[in-house]
Figure 1 (cartoon, rainbow, N blue to C red):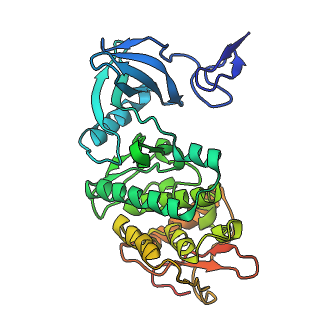
Figure 2: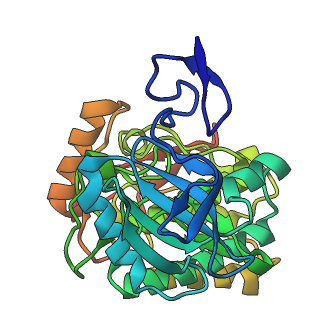
Figure 3: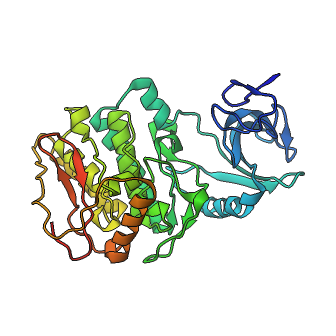
Length: 362
């Protein structure tokens, strides 16, 4: 006997509780025509994972209006889901979905109702079209930085920025969705995370794996998004980069990428937060400088050989996290920016990441 996954439509063993292909739950999802709150009639499943599902539904009170209804499937995540509701309810920006309702269903499940954005997400866009032209990438990211500037100005960190969480809204404007692990942030502090809040491999910064984030963590993720939009692939996982794994420069994969944009990507993906852009506005101004100086050549200069810096050998897993934790303890989360410790190998055109302790030199 087999059962079909309601999300990806693939077959699974009848005894399976979750899909072996997409990890979506095989039981407990709402069927089409289910009526919630005597108002929202479910049309189909838009997506789901181990913690929640999102449905497309029709609003019976407003003819023709479609909404996205997010359902919490994990009783252990009730506080986290309610935190998302609290984060989203008070936001008002064209780069964010509008929350219109929230309620608890008869079975005690939590629901969040928001605008349905019909456009595809950036991951789907790249899968359909291939890597995007640089001017298009700059235009999209500039608008996303405007959204991040608004969020960070309201002391909110998204913490899961990735192509699949950026949808194209009306007129092609990127809309940042899925605030499932977003958190309120107190300026000057580090927001603590836990296993459920790590983010997405390739797009989450190393400090997010060990429990501390701030606004610069979102900027790292956006740098990884730029890398993906230009190359069609995500960067290596951040702990591997922090441990010295090479980052293939976008220009090696796409020679038409300008040196200026490549330098912005390298800085955004610096392993230590104080080596990155320090605010969304600073990163936005750097992109604006590229547009204003189009046609000019910007050179990425390799750093001098390391003398006393903390050189991190290649490694993954616990060793990588331990090394990065030491760099944080040495002051890597200092709010004062220092030159990014990103070296470029001229022979192989790959980037070697060097973590430098506070006060260290390259």
